[in-house]
Length: 72
Image: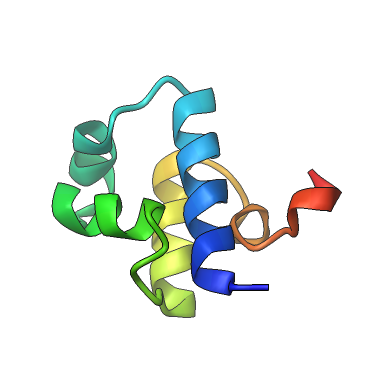
């Protein structure tokens, strides 16, 4: 399992479920839209601190960003 792709898929799904654009998450989180786009494509390897801050921006648990697809 590629964790970068898993986190990217989860982040994109959670962001869309909340009706947020990458630009809106940029404002909430402080991470650039370019970073968020790379994250969603599985090209970033976020730290646990980054996961926590992104989860806060989405108003979800940081655990939701790393749950395997079959547990959603």
